[in-house]
Length: 509
Image (cartoon, rainbow, N blue to C red; front, side, top):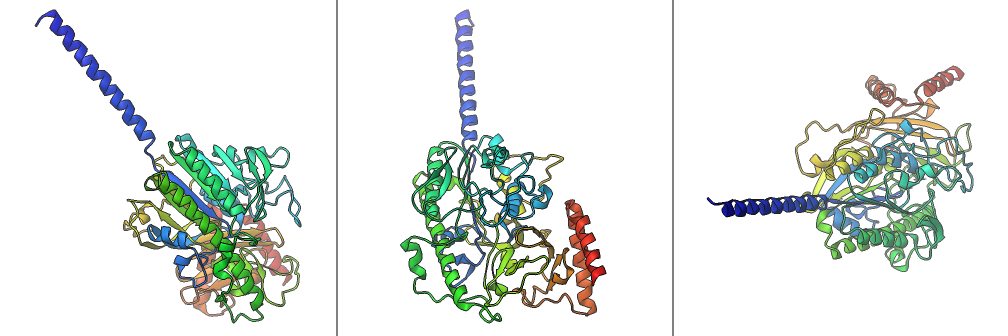
């Protein structure tokens, strides 16, 4: 072989090497841009029954129903705490809110009746690790549109609580826990601006804008709706139309002294607000379809907590309010009209996951899941390694085995919840629930403890805590130990204090 032949072969091999490198580069680039997009929809105050696919006769949520039936519906999804801020802590960090010292909803500086105290319960610790931070570091474009409620950054020196300091590249929405349902003042492009229109429509429009602007990248979009948080009206004519002539079926119509007229009126307003949120969900899904993104986007739907509407004689959530004609008087710890609770209706939420090609349409999951499980699920969907920090233990479990239809025989269906109500009342509630029984302890006042045989009494109508039967007391002792074990496991900062309070209560009886 002559010299020219060697040169030609050498050049040929060099060209092949260059082509190989180019292919590797293209494949690598394609891999970076072929991850699953994630749309996480978090509604505000939406009850598990305010969802047509739940079987409730009053709800009108066609877009939610259609999407849920094409994916996996969770029949037993719960939040760890039944009020906004603590629930959102568990969602964003996969830890209990008490671990971050957030016990009740965070009070905004402009709250009408509560005092804002920046030294207490001010916001989510910036040292926390949210799932948005994990995905951001993995190259996802991250956006939050809507409600954050994990710290009000409008107060001086509180910028550390801004969503962009917790893993989001983009934010527009509420600066606090609430805003008007029409013509709201929202943060947009870093400034507070008065916007015209229905808030639910505005948030959906900006969610679609984020999707369009990031259609060529992998994105995580958290659409945290304002609806159906109060106040519910006004709504659009189309959202009100299904309820204009409806006589709603009440869940607990025979409850003693129930204000039936008020309950029905508020039920309709609540459902109309939910309808507006559902209508805009349809707009967002249509945008994904038009952009050709739906087949590569997993949609996770959850609510921050449940809601009562006449159930057990109350409305609202964990900081429930009596909706009876007469209301219990103010006590040492409870402001008149309030009913602190850990009822299932306050904790249980609508939940489903849509993932084309992965989740079999019509999948129904009966396993007990919680808000803690969202973080590891989202991280695994993104194909990102689960972070581990000594100070940040992820407490949830990935839901992927369940939604893929795998047989998970060792899934723990027991559930622990907490709520330290400090706004409007003082109640240190902790609960442990298995598939048969549920114990609720109020460590501030044991006279408000509750025990329900939920296997036979799922509506929690009959409190058996004072039943003298030996079997009942064994159940109480067993579940009480489970509560104490869990409090110790998460180093509940109230553990010592509540034990002291219980001893004090016993001594004064």
